[in-house]
Image 1 (tube, helix red, strand yellow):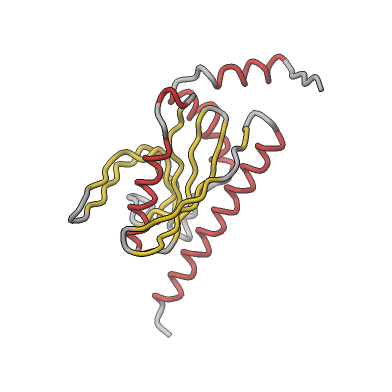
Image 2 (cartoon, rainbow, N blue to C red):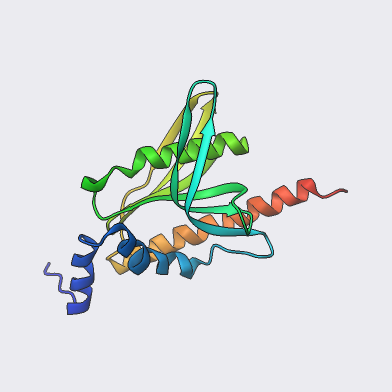
Length: 183
């Protein structure tokens, strides 16, 4: 089957492979994230970019900069709910999985949760991940099939996945607020 693309679509697809990290973020990823609108002033959650994060135990310290996180807090991140790591044009520029896993482990431990979701992006390929805490110091993670954001059908699935995550975060915030409210 011969797949043709418009001149603009072909150019955009080829540019993804050569974009710098910032170009990829601004021209290709931010429009998708902005469409989802991860911010809610009412729920006091929003998206943060390039956020320093660290977590330390007696055995190890994790620290780094998060590319994207949806977190409770409007001025500063207080409770991270979802991460997207590494807006890399291809894996030759770095493997995003270890950094994403470190962020997910940190959030599970800081929030005392059993699981958390995240994603990583390499060029136009998106992967969603779930990290589950099995017991102290033991985790298991799941990685989705890849979604090619240069294909409209996959782009729609990426958008649906992100909307699902957003709604899940809002539910988590609402449930946490119900627990905190006096009866």
